[in-house]
Length: 167
Image (cartoon, rainbow, N blue to C red; front, side, top):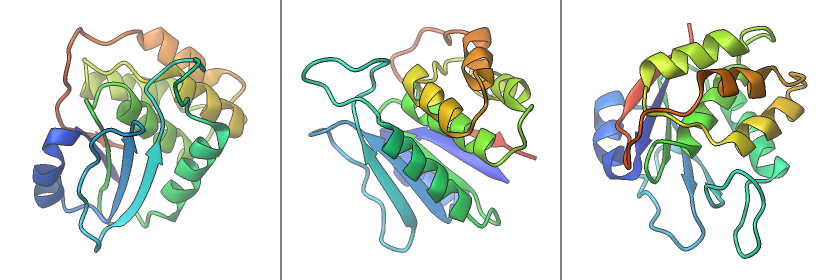
């Protein structure tokens, strides 16, 4: 069971190399979106990469995260699931962590956060996505605490594609 996390500019290559069955695209309102061929199962969520609601910007909602979790649970897991956002640093690593937690038993939050950090030293998962998922998955702060423990990733303006194995 593998999640592939990538920035927008690497989506075409990641689709060819990893051959995922499902794609989750996270984008900002009005921004360029990934071109995904119709033969992939796809979920597109549109919101700004912000940690808390701000006037004039669209924050991720509980409904967005509920849709992310529901979509991930439909994934057959025989091929990778690709998760992409603009830079591959905040929203897509957070979404990958949410998917990993949603598909794992409670109590695995710290181990999964450590796997995320090992796979992507530059990742700084969006805390709003994590907090909303923590609530929806009834993890009682374990997801939020695990991501806070691994802290901010290495300084970067653009991430790179990385796999996150769930097994």
